[in-house]
Image (tube, rainbow, N blue to C red; front, side):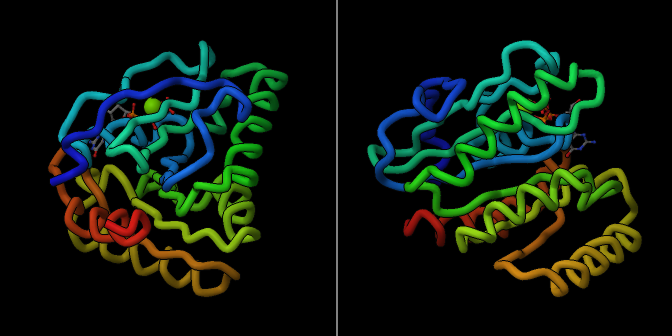
Length: 195
Ligand code: GTP
Ligand code: MG
């Protein structure tokens, strides 16, 4: 699988520090601790993204290259309550700049803990993406934390809520721990990256 060839490219703090805005990019976003880095590692069969970073330290936009023209981007987590308000606002601005202005961005994968989906921050991010007509694919992460029935029920609940929103939203269950949902996620990434 081509994603296994991914390698670390660069970290950026602001939009200006990002690599040249060309080719295709898919951003991985979500609340702090939602399992973004774990999902990214799982999908690239790697340990590229750091999974135990202390929130509140340097929060960077990390770029991973798949090939010359294609990148996966690990965005800083949002909504971490213990981080000072001013710092949260700062991250929010860079994150918002990236999602609203990055031209090569072709889709956003939003990770949400299956037990706490669709927070206010998630909605804000999805609105920014939708306002640009960017597709959003939601991974309901840590699906191993629920039994099969409740997990399926939660998926249906989120799907129903998405139908009420204006935007191109899809959703699936995902577990990095059990390595479940990878094929379904890869199909979306392939489609967006025109692979
Ligand atoms: P930040 O970078 O701080 O925003 O967090 P993140 O969204 O990148 O989350 P990360 O991947 O670091 O995972 C956070 C915690 O959730 C870690 O302790 C992981 O081991 C755990 N975790 C991630 N994915 C899963 C999963 O599929 N199942 C279970 N049970 N735990 C998971
Ligand atoms: Mg992370």
